[in-house]
Length: 490
Image 1: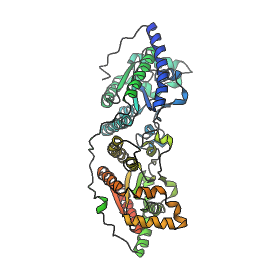
Image 2: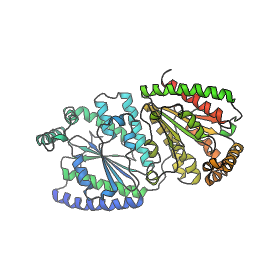
Image 3: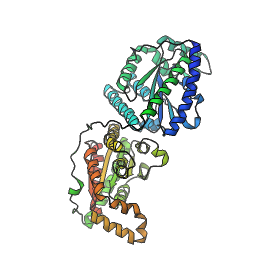
Image 4: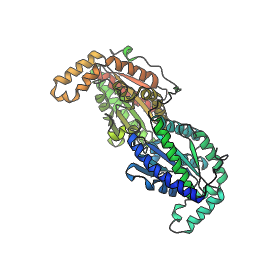
C-alpha cells in the first residue's frame, strides 16, 4: 500500500493558507460536537523519523481547547510497561468519551522496530498484528473514532532533515540512533512498514498517508481528514456493530442447575488440607515471582455464595507484597466513559504478581445485560471481546483462573436471613441483593450462556460447589496450586 501510494497534487501556497484557516476553525467546532456527543477520538501520528509528526501535532492542536485533549509521546516501553501485556500501555491511555487523545508514535512503531531489529521473530510479529487488529476493532465497535496517520518522506528528504536537526544544538537531541538506523536501512524499513500497514488497514480504522515534504501542506492534510473522520463518526454514532463468529476453542461445561451441590468435606479433612494447600501455595508464590509468571484470578458467583471467604483463604497463603485483590463495583464516571475493559486493563498485575478480582469483566454479560446498562448488541459482542482479552493475557504468559461460585436458591435464602438477623453481618446484605434474588431464573440463563460461550481451552471456567463453603475453598486452592505447577512446568 505505502509503496504504491500516489501523492495528491499539492495546491499553491495561497490555496493552502485559505483552506488551512477554514479547516482549523472547523476542527475547533468539531471538538465541541464530540464533547456534546461524548465521542472518544484517538489520533495516531506515526511515520518516518524526521517527518515532522511532533511539529505538525503541535500545530493541529493549537486551536483546540486543552481541557479536552491529551497528547502522549510513546517511545520504547519503560521497565514497568515491559512487565505488562503487549497492549497494556496503549489500552490504559485511551481517551474518555468527548475527548481527544493524540499519540505521537504508537503500537506500529513498537512492533515494526522490534521486527526490524530482530527483537521478535516472525511468529510473534504475526501474533502481535492479530492483537492489534482486534484492539483497533474493539475500540471502533465500542464507539471510538480511531484515525491513523503515516507521515511519509523520501530517503533523501529524511537524511536532509536529520542533518539539519543535528546541526543545531537546540534540536540535536531530537535525533535518536533509531532515526539514523532507519535512514541507513530505508528500503528494509519501507518493506516492513508496507507489510504492517497492509495487515492493519481496516475499514473501521484505515491508514491515511501524509505527504510530509511541505509542513504546511501536511498540516492541512491532517486537519481536513480529522474533520471528515469526525463528521462520519458523528453520523454513524449509535449504530450496532457487527457480531463476529466466535472461533476460539471451548471446553464443554454443564449447566449450573445440573451441578451436584451435595458434595462436602469433613471438618478434620478441611483443616488438614487447608494447611497443606496454603503451605504449597506460599512456596509456589515465591517461584512464580522468580520466573516472572503473572496470575489472574477472577471470582463470580451468586450473592452470599462465599466468594469473600474463598478469597480470604487463598490470600492467607500469599506474600502481601506480591498480590492485590480488586473488589469490582459499579464503574466510576471516568470508567463508564471508556471502553468497559479499560478499568480491568488498568488493574492487571506485573509479571510475577497475582491479581484477584472479586467480580470481573463478566458483569457486562450478567448485571449490565439484565439491568439494561448496555444494549443487546453490546453484551452479545462482549463474549468474543472477552475471549480476545483473555487470549491476550494467555499469550502474555499469564495463568488465568475463573471461578464460578455456585449455590442453590434455598441456601442463598438461608444465608440472606442469617445476615439479616445477625447484627455484625447486616452490612453484607442490601436491598439490591433481595431484588436480584427475584431475577434468579433470568440470571441463571445469563450465567449458563456466559459459561458456555467463554470457557475456552486457555481460560476455562471452574465451578466451585459452595453449599459447603469448606469444600469450595479446598477446591479453589487445589485448582490454583495445580495450575501454577503446570505453568512452572512441574
